[in-house]
Length: 509
Image (cartoon, rainbow, N blue to C red; front, side, top):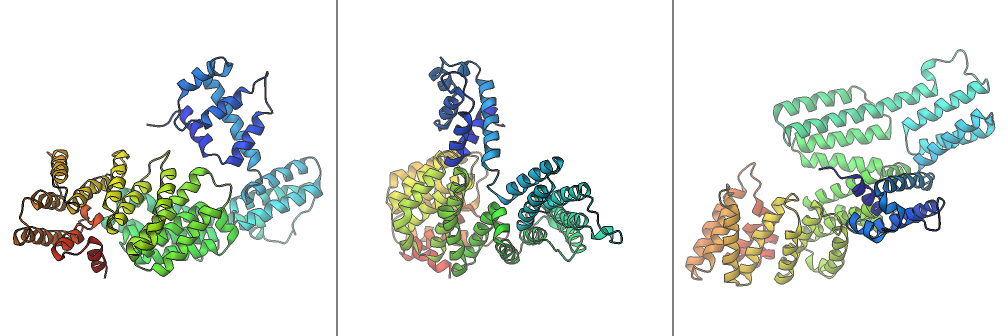
């Protein structure tokens, strides 16, 4: 269901940075009717609510006129916020500075102030050039052409129209638009046919490659970046070749970082790419290459643009947390991470305060795994119980894994009655539904563990379960849910009288 206007206004206010909120209030104070600034009262009321509650606002401000005409008051407030943000952000980015200079140039030209118009248009062109914004460059060059007509400064009669700066820039714009169109069509193929896709998806992707190669060489950084993104997605989703996909994305990261202005203009894409590349490097156990990327995320979160919105800042924080935790899990440097878990938990709690996310639940689960590996079973159980607060629509695989992992932790703690209760609850939840083999094996082991005498009988139960699980894990095209927490390692730990962490280390060799 789509959100209503009230929720949109509430979400917008909470997405503003503190500097932006101050500027909005300055703008609101310019339009006061009477002794009380009612728009500012409404703004503060919405900013102070974690969850939107219009009834409380109407009750609290019943004596003020805006409470009686709340829909109109909200619409007026939204328009003031948008107007204030246009002014506030006018000089905040090269694109906005370029557009502002272009508008000034056009105004000055119409008022016959040609020298000032030329100066402002040159500034606009410089800003657009710095960030490779070809659409803006075309607009500026068109305005410069109009200025040249006004001053009767015409091109050389013998010059070729094909060499006109506007024509040349338009060709570069066409290049960026063309490769964007190719990338969009690959996304459509992936969404329709899924990962792997089959022969039809492969044929469609191959046709797109031919279309892209037909326009080589690619001149613009934007086009190069988009083409690398296309090749990476094709390698990962169509060809099932993650290592080739990673190589393309590392090249793409180099393309973005080669020009600092271009990186800043595409900062959200850069952040997501850093996180994606770092995560895959961790999975491939290239920790030395992953750590500098983790540090980039940390630096951007801590010292990046102070104009990052709270939502964007916390999104970067969650990406940093994910890489930090994955590094610890895969490199087995859990003791190094342990002292920072309270800080990570604080960041995670702040991140998930307003919006529960897929990344948040994954981080929560992985911290629980770390605590389990460190032998902090009670802390792990408390953290796993927090996963129950997430709606079923968010990572149902992790929610099921959390319930199953709790059973194993209680077995380790020798809580027989709790294990029995949890197994019965899972059986009730799964009644009438198809059950994956690995989940059935886990529940069977849990229900028989304490009823089987320690020694040969229990060892036999565990051994049979391990053989079945290993065979199931090795079955092609099967993604075992219990592999999320490596049930196989837990079984081996029981058989070898070692720890889950020790067996994880052996499996990773």
